Amino acid sequence: MSEIVPSMQTSTIETEALIIGAGPVGLFQIFELGLLEIQAQVIDSLHVIGGQCVELYPHKPIYDIPAIPFCTGQELIDRLQEQIKPFNPTFHLEQEVTELTQQIDGRFLVLTSKKMCFLTKTIFIAAGVGSFQVRTLKVPGIEKFDDQQLFYNVQDPALFNNQNVVICGDNEVALNWAIHFVGKAQSVTLIHRRDSFKASPTKISTMKDLCAANKMQFKVGQITGFEESKDHLTQIQLTGTDGLTELIPLDRLLVFLGLSPKLGPIADWGLDLERKQVVVDTEKFSTNVPGIFAVGDINTYPGKKKLILSGFHEATLAAFAAKDYLYPEQKIHLLYTTTSPKLHKILGVQSPTFD
Image (cartoon, helix red, strand yellow):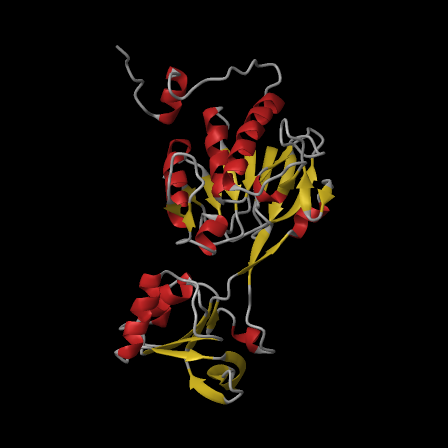
């Protein structure tokens, strides 16, 4: 199993490879490095593994992964996680890299927003279109209730039991939690600015059935204000498409408005950039800074195509380039997973016998 480490850690973690981004390309980068016996640590700004595939379109169909005629975003991530199990990577979630400095010995000292410290020989930027930031509710003053009554993710579902819960959003995550809290919360009200959803038909149907049975409510409108008493959020103001407003009492407010990509601190690392993308060569997918590679949607080069399968190709060449960078005295032999006993041992599988 892949290990997910708690965020707050002050000791320095030394590693040969640090991957920034736990989306599909970042996960495949773990696999390709693992075949070359390079262990990796992984950092991601999201609270789950999977990047855009999980956060933005877990049920969206994908048809262009080789040998897989069809899978969803979540299924692709599940398969990639199964594939990297032999390498036991460590994931450090809900944080982003804030500082990067190269040491005298050529290694990189990396600090994160959760005060973690890494000393790594190579870095692989697999950050998609940048680190994803939660889109927050744009109501002046409501941020004072963050992590008290206003939440952008669910860490402890028990906090919402026997509470009047209002959920704002139209995506799969919003509907999942709305359905989950029915029967557990005192009341559940789902709100969105229009009567359409970015979720699977099954989830939409279930939500509407629960509304029809008066087990939860759905209201069309936008949160435009709130009321409080003694520093306690008591009601939100909902403005409908007709301009009329109503007050909805609540104890807890959950907001799922999606994610906003930002290049963030990567812009300050001295890398060559072109339109907020990292410039790489097409032999090694290395940047202008030796030891730093960029794969997936974050990079750019002549003929670049932003496809997952292109990212897989880039991760493969970057892994071989990193092996050569780390061990220039070693001759790297191209081995095949179909026939190599060494790779079978690394993967923990039995070598086949052929008649």
